[in-house]
Image (cartoon, rainbow, N blue to C red; front, side):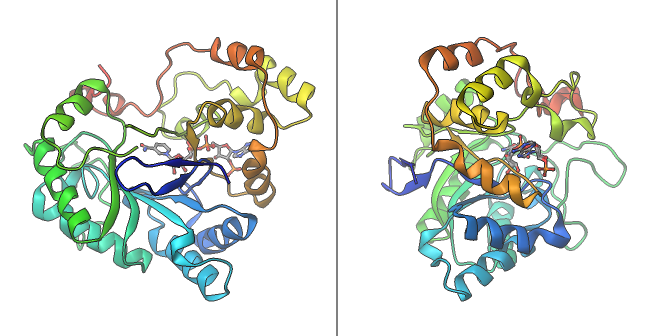
Length: 301
Ligand SMILES: NC(=O)c1ccc[n+]([C@@H]2O[C@H](COP(=O)([O-])OP(=O)(O)OC[C@H]3O[C@@H](n4cnc5c(N)ncnc54)[C@H](OP(=O)(O)O)[C@@H]3O)[C@@H](O)[C@H]2O)c1
């Protein structure tokens, strides 16, 4: 499978992975097992997705059945500002990474990301895990932990062998430039490899009330026309638009047929004209903006 080579370690990160957000907890172990069986070699998880233990069960079963070895699978996890936004302080970040590894039942993550550049008040995992955005009072509570402290903890995870690569998620250029000023280990997915999420549009955000426009990219006439011409699904066209430009993708599906067909998105090439017409759909429309929960979290301002 096509892969991106990560700059510092030379490790190969598969261009197509499987996303774990909203993968149903009760069937997650089977879904992950079947995704590995179908050929996926990258799993994109996070503490916040609430299914780490089940995803780890699927991985361990696949290894036990001889489908893969641990070193054949690339496991990405995220901690909002190390261990979710509430774990940004140095010791909490390290505590969280260890807890997440324990839940997965593995010794190291291939890539560990700071989920958002937002630090929230610490929540003891014994009290609530995953802690999510809101405190017991239903409000967002910020915490004064600078990103440099969190990044330092991430680097220690690398030195301890608990994370092979570390990186950032949901960060814009100004933050990345700042991290590059003090980083001992540069963020990995800038050399920097990039991964796209929510390739199919706003579906995941509708039920959260976080999408102003519900129109699906999967049914857009530009995409359906290209899909018909190539005899591919609209999902495959949307994924190929990214992978053909060396942007990794991590589609999620709870449906076994779609899990398989999404992985087959690199078996054809879009023309330059196809890519240009898909790119021309850009409306600077942003999903997953924390400012919609609390205006103080305007990281994309
Ligand atoms: N770093 C971050 O902050 C961040 C944020 C968002 C997402 N992510 C990662 O990115 C992954 C993907 O993003 P996403 O979860 O928003 O979802 P997505 O991959 O854009 O998929 C959205 C929805 O499309 C449906 N779908 C999947 N394949 C399809 C196909 N072939 N045809 C028609 N519909 C299809 C799925 O529903 P069914 O399950 O019913 O198929 C899914 O719920 C996440 O799972 C997560 O790992 C990261």
